[in-house]
Length: 408
Ligand SMILES: Nc1ncnc2c1ncn2[C@@H]1O[C@H](COP(=O)(O)OP(=O)(O)O)[C@@H](O)[C@H]1O
Ligand SMILES: [Mg+2]
Image (tube, rainbow, N blue to C red; front, side, top):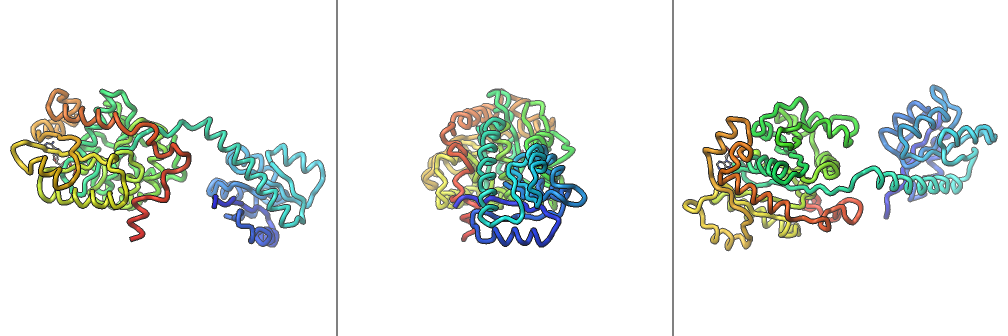
């Protein structure tokens, strides 16, 4: 079934509000989501709930219904307003319509009349809203690239940061780098930024919208825009999967690539990222514990029906001389290796100490060339047809890794 029409009931008489609730109780297309006893409270509630329809009495203390309607049409234009009043006079009707109301009902009214007025207004507002959205919002064309590993210390953060820089500089792409290693995020250290505010502050704001999110992104000299992790581990739990979902949805309309550094756990927030991701870079090193975790991760992802094309296995600190031979690895994992990043402690450490990503500090180094190849792969895939929102609405809701794990 489609979403129910949400209704806010505004009337100074508690009996009148209760009466309206009663009239609408058995209509399964309509849901009363809140009440307000005057225009002032109605404004606050409307900003909080964004109801589809507001039923508005006219004569009320503190702020009357006509004034409230005038303000609501400007401040919460997505809600359609139905005036309800004992006064049936033409003068009131005219005032209400001038103020921005869409319908007018005279008390007392029958349940059918009320429900029909609500449905009519909701339908018109729905159309209006779709047109407005189509005009205002750019298409969500940004691609989410999750950098993940079930083991720590394999180079997720190092690779995420340098990949972001490569895409922003050599590929002239608009790139956001989101540090979702919420407890021990290190993107700030590698990129040498001292963020005034972090994602922990962002999610505490009242309404998370594009403009606000934009003001939280820290501009790095490379052009990469960074959303920093909380400064302290205890702030991590303030960020939920729903926040991550919202943040990524907004970023997809703002930039071309969203590179997300993740912690080494399949936490709720990590799963929200993997759900959004067009590409998952699964980082591994050629040591047994790392390989064991890669195998487990691939198993989980395959039982969750993640398409294999979505996952790229990236070997970091690669060397031909040491570690498990690549062919053996591919055979035991039944999975191809997409990229190999050489081990180069000297370059990596020097760059961290300088506070400049190695991709910028030493573009000729082998490790930088390997990052460039990885960036080419990332940029070359995940075309428009694979974009999750291409079908309209949110992505395959019925099939989220988060949902599946919760169900177990
Ligand atoms: N290709 C590499 N060569 C040499 N050292 C590396 C390489 N990749 C990462 N490192 C080093 O390994 C350590 C762990 O890297 P990091 O990116 O913090 O891992 P993770 O984010 O997976 O925990 C860091 O000290 C980093 O400098
Ligand atoms: Mg890390």
